[in-house]
Length: 407
Ligand SMILES: *Cc1c(COP(=O)(O)O)cnc(C)c1O
Image 1 (cartoon, rainbow, N blue to C red):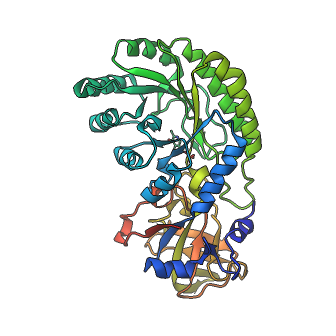
Image 2: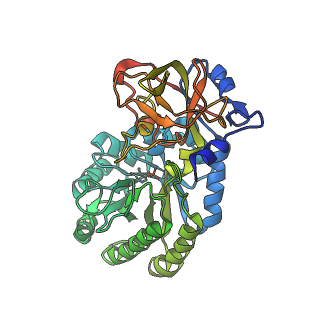
Image 3: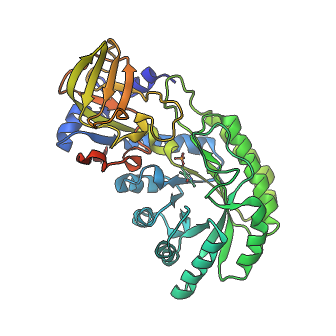
């Protein structure tokens, strides 16, 4: 998929960029200020539909709230997915405000505080244990509340998801319990008043290669089946992770969802269910559900030329959309798709789009082929629906926060 194709998917009948049938200028007027993030409901639901068509019916689809915790968006997704995965006390409260039952909410993440654990036990959500110490603290919280906590063991596998944007399994990790230590932990858990429902294994994130995801999920299934032999209670829950990536960079190939789905059918029918007949397999996806459904929209404040380079200086920047600046997990900086809102199909000489922060890190697009910029017009940065505002250093330089809308 090329950047031009991504941009073209947002061009409306007027020839300008549109979200839910409205131009970005009209949306800016509606918001009353720039910059803003806009997320499109219909793209999110279309993505869920594609997943449902490709994945086994038996497989539950969870949304990882971390990717974009905007409450209205989480509410929207709650109507379409089977569960929500959260990673902080605040995300938990957002999830509990939706129609998703606590039974289908999972809480993972290292360093959960006693207060967060107590909240999670009181809410009745599934706590994904990151260590033996955390297991003991959960059991204290349960005793204090007179509620039996629901837990799963988050396992740090002995393999990683190769070629991922972010590796979160394999080798030493702050996430989960090393696979080889899990049998002993399961013995310890039997001595605590906890309902041990199963396992959670997340091997990595932002992967575009279906065969690698399929291999990781197959390895995860094998690991779960072998660890289950040490369980003292019936395994009812297995979170297989996810890691489905989206195309950010020019010519990134979108994930072959058909292939991933085919493999998941086999893994579930041939391996998981025969060994663990009561199991509810889950995958948890963040960016794949929402990343391509969002735009970050900024206004050009200044256009200047410096020694042969044309700069468009916009009223936003890395403090709102850090990921596009290349400072969120990229090894080599590459551009996200960027276009002029009113003239997305027009190409001029290369333009470097920078934000208003006084640091060279604040780069939204380096030598982008786009329309020659004009002061006052809007520029959109694509693929801004996940890890945008939520993953950005909003306090840096003290500029106002952007608005977020869902249309
Ligand atoms: C961050 C995270 C996710 C979501 O990752 P995406 O790349 O957004 O799909 C899922 N599960 C866990 C445990 C995570 O930490």
